[in-house]
Length: 73
Length: 173
Image (cartoon, rainbow over all chains, first blue to last red):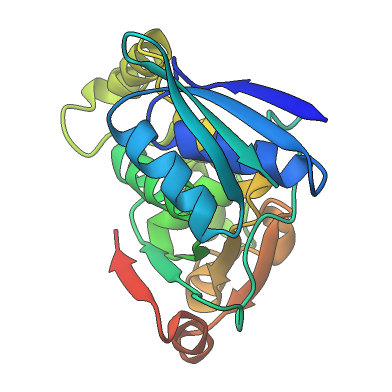
């Protein structure tokens, strides 16, 4: 199952908080697509997901400063 | 009602690559409590075990009564309880203007889509951050565990806090 999360309007620390809580809610094996902006969210959301044992499948630019990070739980 | 669904997101001691942040929340100031909960939720969200030890004025952040209330056992504790108030009565550490500034800050935070102190506290609960009450401060103020939000994990003294925070980073705010 694929879940979606848009944190492009969020600021620190809610960018990480919303991603973490969403990942905690979904089932193992599910996919989470996170829309985020470049800078701290882009640098740290994929990294912290990896550190916490999740699998970052893809990072792609959507438009301008907006990126899509695909994470598998 | 909670803004966030509660999870068991908090990592447990003993897990591999275990990282830990322990905060001593001494201040009851709106701005300093915002710093406490910003650091705490950010750290928990990137995989840290987070402990917050509330003492003295910091206890205001986790009282059940969020406004001003005569809580505590005895005349002086009740008076202090009223003047200290809860999280909604927290002043800013500078330029408080008789309580006007926290209202302005909350407005500016919402306007700029930055989490308010109350939202950060809700997030802290959802992230499973460990909240502890200082036993000594609680007794001075004539309070009991039931005067605090039910998410409070325990009432502790220094020795237990040191044990809990061992092996991680500790900040005093």
